[in-house]
Image (cartoon, rainbow, N blue to C red; front, side, top):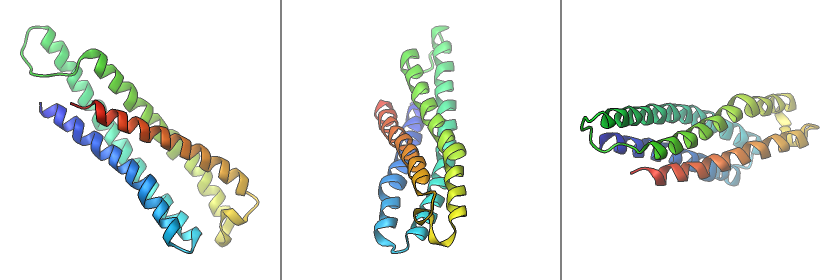
Length: 162
């Protein structure tokens, strides 16, 4: 029972952070600040913090799902351990968490550094005023697509918690 509640809490924190940063805070920055370079800098910082939170939540979910799996092995040995995740449901949860973590790793350690290089090379005028505008736009699109997939998976993960 406690493990199920912890999984729900971690899933809620993870999903909420993804949705808040990606669909509330970042768009609000660009809608509110007249300096788009500043808005982009702040948004990049928020996405950096969110990525580290995602890695922490993903690690916590992996541990909680592993403990639930150990409970299943104990339960099958005849020891009463209370409610535990069914093996198939646990496997699906593991796949969702793994896909979300993979998205975080690809974007945070692959795509974001490339975008940061382009921003730094563009200087104070901003990347949207530089020759790298189209490359930045392509990388931003890839990043946004992965983020959308993560956001949908987060909803699925959240709804699956009991």
